[in-house]
Image (cartoon, rainbow, N blue to C red):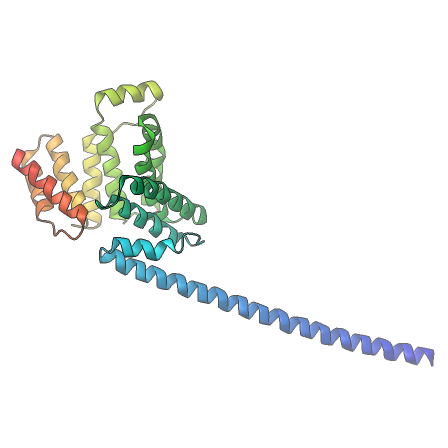
Length: 273
């Protein structure tokens, strides 16, 4: 009898265990579904914000774009973060932005770009905007830091190109890097030579190759690339080619404040030739 009772108790316990296991399984699966749907909703939300951001960027709505993206400054998404870095920098560049605000936005943009890189090291745009923002911060840090940062900036531009060889902007910026060190004033060269065993150097010929490569990747994509082609040819004393590219820069449709500045500089250079 005792054996029968024991058997019945065991059977009931086993049934309860099975029921418990089944219940736990159902609960676990439900949690997975809820979690999965939350991830999907979050992904859709990120995609919607990015779509809105790209529309505003294409429309030249710099302030609206920044206000949209700064709400997501704590995001874990690299695509959102590098766009916020870009928007912060663009806002800093506006003439209506005060000097104090510009400085803060410049440092903020670097932090956002750095965070984007931390979230996804394989993101080409994150490398590009980190390099751009680091260069901007150098304007506030002095010549020693600026020249020291140049090595890091070059590495990130090169990494951006490696990850996305068709990105004309990254190629252009590598050209700007070369141009900047080709025209480095003599006194800054002396400072660089004292501070660094092997300071960064480049040539106008190297810069020209990058500017042409950028144009090949995406013809007429950026007014400033046209301007730099003209300026580089001027440095190389090729006035015929300088006139060609500076004329293109002057005639480029002015969609942004930067385009207007490019038109003005191109016109001044054309009048000086």
